[in-house]
Image (cartoon, rainbow, N blue to C red; front, side, top):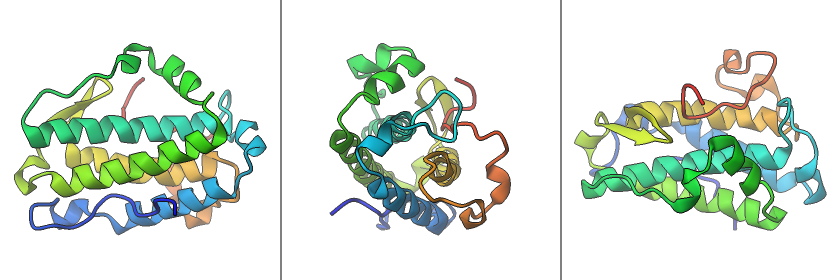
Length: 188
């Protein structure tokens, strides 16, 4: 069964209520359903984002979640964030490379990063949510990154061109025309 819950599983040490976003959970479930509805061949078709196919949208969303989860894990352990060798590639190259994975692997990457992010959020101590952390060279608090993730997952649902509609977004202003791939990072 695919992972559909989004950030966060509550525990006594987890994020403050304001960071535990029902909207982010719903957005991830929405995105996951749309992704599962695409055939393997359809993942290679153009997305709503100029220059991106659907596989690149999936790769971008998953890589952002992975980077955030790794940074939150490091914060939980009070260690510097790990840097995986593939993360040394420029962002566009990493997304393009990841998008070449077989369709099943891309779906599994999405499912895995959803679970990893849930666990990282669950394990992060309440007082750590306001601590700055670094994801892909950008710094913000875990709480701010999760707010960005909420927007990202909803807008990515539209970017897939798989049946998502603007009126389903909690805030339709998130999807400015033309659609751009939202990231957790302010500038890439």
